Length: 322
Image (cartoon, rainbow, N blue to C red; front, side):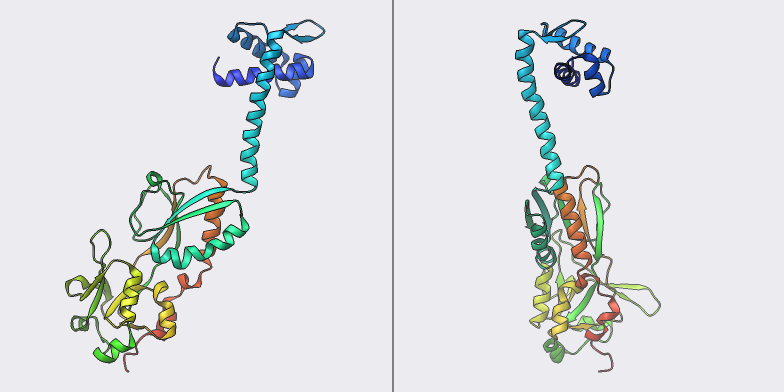
């Protein structure tokens, strides 16, 4: 008798004793009285002992049956408690959710969304790793990853958040000293700040030519400063070091304050990077993960910095006739 048969037989025994007959137990369980009798008989055979005496009028537990059912009810109550615990968790999500995200995006966009989530679901516990390295969600034990870049196809479920448009920026002080480039070719005479990914790859800068073709500049060939953290490129540009390609969401506050200006806006291609949320499974997801995913998607969708149209940046660009 396997475990599933054993559980069915124990339930049949308990219902038969409580209801007073196999027929009544069968009606409660939705099976025939013969099936209940067969389940009890199979349990007795597996245990090698008679659990109840049957007559045409009533059922009576043997001494061994009473001892067995007393312990079996404890197990059945524990099973009911386990089911109730999961049901309660579905009604009120609880437990820890582990999130992996990049340093700058996590600090500026994910972290501000968490207080409202925790206020809405006080039984949740959120653990966030701010780390720009590439992680394996399943191997490293994360529930959700929030990542940006050229996202490769994978077995993970991927939910897009936004395009990560980029712009070329420089400080007004730098432009006053060195002038603003009027064409992509003019960048050869400027001080460039390059971004190197942790893989060692330097992010290229792309430009649209008059004939619609795309030209590429590798800033790493002549960069006077190469950095890995995207927020550090913004800071270096604000400090007047040179021209950098940075994400709009990172530069927007500095553009609005006037500490940065956009250069070559009409030539520069904003890139194909995107920000996504990834997680291992769509089906049978724990409630704690479900509510966290839903909240973060809603919060990041409503984050206006992440969804600014490119033409809205015209006001922050260096005018070519100035």
